[in-house]
Image (tube, rainbow, N blue to C red):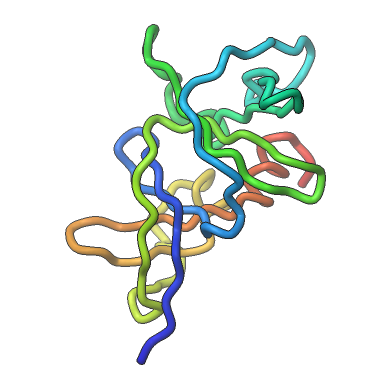
Length: 146
């Protein structure tokens, strides 16, 4: 029997991404953000998560995607990092899914450079690909710490 892994899934500009479920602290709807001057363009601001200040990173900007249209509010996937929780801003939150290791493949060569930098690989699912986000590399790339 093949091993499996669970992912918290989300959508960015119609692309289907996943983060290993053990890295996810919580998923929440849009939160008001406080802008921070003179930071990387990928930092959308800071949110107050029950008294804890959390940096909100826009994954669309990390991946070189177009900004959301006016009025389209992002959702938050709050992940655990060595420096504390960080919110990843996504378009829509999906389900937690379990995938078989047999469906795993390395990152496709035709993927855009920004995606290749932060995607560990893909899982072939029925009719779509699940792009596995490396949260640490996404944060390092987005914040200029690579």
